[in-house]
Every structure is written in structure tokens, then in C-alpha cells.
Amino acid sequence: QHAEPRLSIYGRSPDEWSKLSSWFVCNRIHCPNMTWMIQVPRIYDVFRSKNFLPHFGKMLENIFMPVFEATINPQADPELSVFLKHITGFDSVDDESKHSGHMFSSKSPKPQEWTLEKNPSYTYYAYYMYANIMVLNSLRKERGMNTFLFRPHCGEAGALTHLMTAFMIADDISHGLNLKKSPVLQ
Image 1 (spheres, helix red, strand yellow):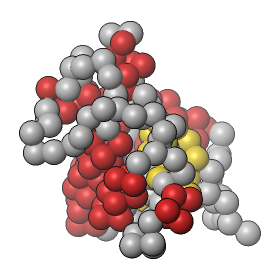
Image 2 (image 1 turned 45 degrees about the vertical axis):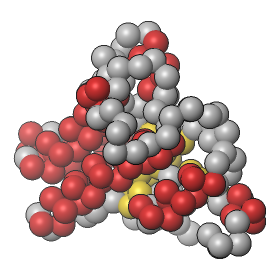
Image 3 (image 1 turned 30 degrees about the vertical axis):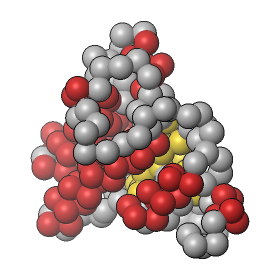
Image 4 (image 1 turned 180 degrees about the vertical axis):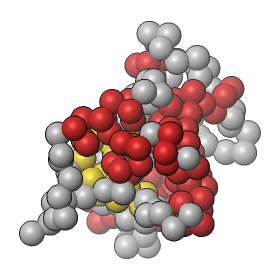
């Protein structure tokens, strides 16, 4: 038997990883038949509307910087280093049917410039998650560490652009029910 439960990192603050890994190690949650996925809810709009985050870039920094730091210097946060050995990948979750009204393109604001209170589009989130995971994986592979998959929730609801985006950048997807509406993508 094998299990792969999900744990959330929200990106509200950089200490989320430290708290989660401390809980993981202190409670001896690891076992050989269990790996973990980190799900990242797409709720930037909630945090921005309450002024918890100045821009989308800060959310990405809170999600990925602690993992980059633990990869570069594992001794600086030994609990996080242990925890990361049991992580298989990242998921991106939220209600896909919510329309953002933003079409991601080369003209889209950079994450540090995204100060709007509305959520970036699904494709915007997916691209920046993918980009960070790819750079992180390259660094971890170079150091002989485990790497992470990108397996977002995709295709359960929402636009076909979600599936097209995931086809190009994700390792796998969760759901894919909307594939029945697009034989070409199948």
C-alpha cells in the first residue's frame, strides 16, 4: 500500500514551511509507504485584499524561497531538509470555474508588479509555479537531492486553456474531466 496525502502551503508568510516541517519531524509522520504532495491554493486575492501581501511575487517568494534556501544550505533548516525528502511534488488548487478575466501573455505584469486585488489567471499561476519548480529541480538534481513533480488540479471545470497549459508544463494533472470536451487534447 502507498499513500500520498496533501499538505497546504499558502504563501502568506515564509515561516509556513518551518512550521509544517517542524510538525512533520516532531510527530514522526514519515514512513516508507507514504509520500506527500504540497498543494498551493490559488488564493492570492484573499491575502491581497487583507493587505497580507504587497504583490503576487511575495506569495511566490514565500512558497519557494525557504525550499531554495534549504536546498542550498540543508544544515540551516534540518527539519525542512528532512521533510523535503518525503515530498513528491506540488499541486495548485482552487475552483477552476472562477474566471479571472486576465489572459496571460508576454505583456502581463511580472509577479512583483501584480499588485491588483484580483487573482491572476490559472495560466499565470501555473507558469510561475512551473518556472520555480524547474529551477528548484535543476538545483536539487545537481546536489543529488530528490526533485518534485508539478501535478496541478486541472480540467475539472473552467476553460480549456487550463488543460492546454497543463499539457505543456505539468508532469501530470489531477482530474481532467473536461478532456471529454476536447478530443484534440485527448
